[in-house]
Amino acid sequence: MMAAPMAGVAPTARTRRRRPAAEVPHLDCQQPEPLQRRLWIVEEERVRIRAQALVSGRGKGAAGGHVAAAERRFLVALARAFGGALVFALPLLMTTEMWMLGSTMHPLRLALFLLVMFPILGGLAYYAGFEESFGWRDFVLSACVAYAVAFLAAAIGLALLAALGPGLSRPEMVGRVALQAVPASIGAMLARSQLGAREEEQEEERRRDTYGGEIFLAAVGALFMAFNVAPTEEVVLIAQMMTAWHAVVLVVASLALMHGFVYAVEFRGHTRLPAGVSPWSEFLRLTVVAYAQALLICLYVLWTFGRAEGLAGPELLMETVVLGFPAAIGAAAARLIL
Image (cartoon, rainbow, N blue to C red; front, side):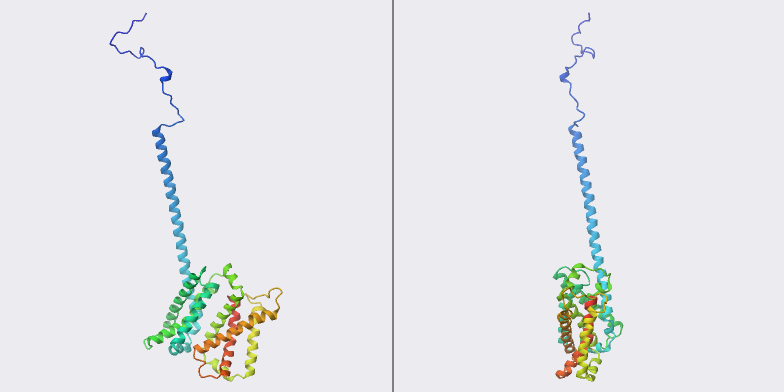
């Protein structure tokens, strides 16, 4: 028999009493300890924050890229507008009659002409601006930018050609630049449609294919051509040489050429007659109206340049018909090209 343990002596490992099974703590490997769980939560939060920062950085980079691309497109549009202004204004920049008119014409008439041109430029921005526009604020802004580019191009062009110098007074220099800015502004506004990539904007195409769009573009073409020809002395000389029969034949020829250019000879951009519409109806509805509009524009241009002063009614009518011939060609060409 084993002897009983002595009093006051601690029990050894062999003599230490075992705990009951219920007292032994149960370790579940599937459930982490509270500290380990907190570590996992902290790590997951750190990963989530890193992911959000990465996505936010990419978003800012993409937004910055879009802004940079938009700025580049606008700068390209400005440069293209400057080139269009030079191309459209170059013939008149090298015409001495325009230099003299800019120095001598009445300031109020010139100011009125510039004022009339502003809504025309806004309309061009609606139908075929130098950059894509969507609202009336964009149209007004485009007209202002076109005017600014046109004045700059006209000033640079005249200075390069020695048409601006110390021998001129300030009003004379302002008049020359302002007068040359009229055709230059049309060129600046039409730079994208005529000098840029020939992508067709569906919204602008839909606007141009309306009756009002065709009449407006015909008016712009007539104004541009009349403005280029009216300053010359040949309009007055031809009107003096012509008889009444010459004037009648010239009116008929102008109408025939206007209608034929758009509907008959199949230039690029030519128009086909709508189904169920007679040729005479289209002739009266579009061609005659556009020609009458061109004659009124010619009359206004002649008055602006002082060509109507001191003339009797028949003489003024003759000059208007003479100037109406190139204006009619310009109206038809605008309907084809724009």
